[in-house]
Image 1 (tube, rainbow, N blue to C red):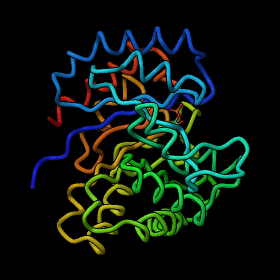
Image 2 (image 1 turned 180 degrees about the vertical axis):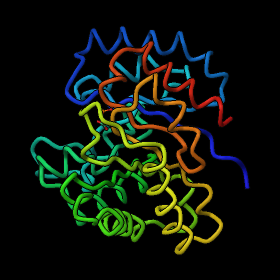
Image 3 (image 1 turned 120 degrees about the vertical axis):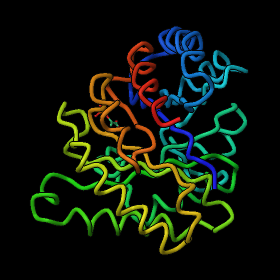
Length: 256
Ligand code: PEP
């Protein structure tokens, strides 16, 4: 079974309009050779800039992800978009169940798996996010919360497509706080997720890339990505500037 290719994705949240997106994408494309084809790199820009991002990234190998996807193919869902709409633009990945979606927009263990399923059906790579809040960690519930959220996602995945799934462990207390999980804390949860995968999918669990997210920066990326089950990173704040995101992605070269 082949080695997992490290995968870093920048989540631009509600930042960067069209012009800034084009500028940053061009800079990322220019810096892509630094990754020597050995680390996968994606960005998830604002929905209104996806077309511009896809155009600017075309042919470069830089992947474009959506920050969300609806589960229906089409219909009366004002403010949403389907996986087919993303595919039409050239988008290849979709973040599903980011903690901000869970906390602010009602995503839960019913809707997140539906989004993951819709992404899979359309041929996209779903990046399913899981992670505990500070209160849950302090109450000793991390393992339970992560297991519940992960199992809900795995429930909708078929064995022959498991290699396409990406899971991101993002402790909510580490997102945007500047306080990252220690490499040991991250590895502990990633190993738990790997065990859950193995229980369902056997040896194929080794094919699934597990990203860590939560205050990843150029100066802590290397130590996090040194952990055996930390196969990449989902990066917010430090992904907004191409140079910083590229520096984080370069930390993945040590795994290649
Ligand atoms: C995120 O938005 O997924 C994230 C991890 O943000 P930050 O890197 O800013 O903590």
